Image 1 (cartoon, helix red, strand yellow):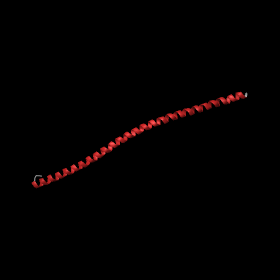
Image 2: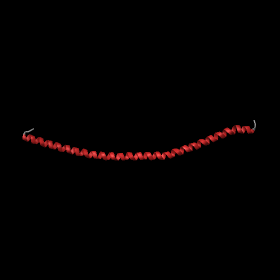
Image 3: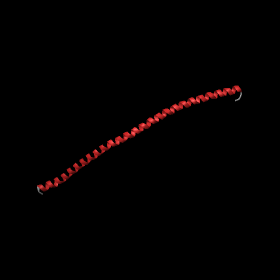
Image 4: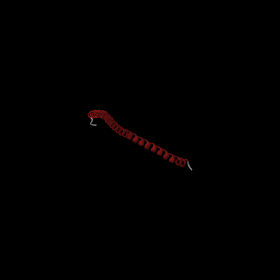
Length: 98
């Protein structure tokens, strides 16, 4: 075996391996760039959804406050009805109706 044959036998597979490593590095960088570009889009979408949830949460807290006010008014109304019932009961007792 001559020196040239030895160099070709070792050199060609080594060269092919180096080309494969280079191609893998290029493909990795390409995929990494695509993921990085998608990351901005995905983050924007998540931020949009988060903003919408915050909007819904604000509306729900407003509705909760309105229900609390309505509950307070209802309690006041129940108190007034009980007062009227007590008065009617006393009137009935005085008149001997009840």
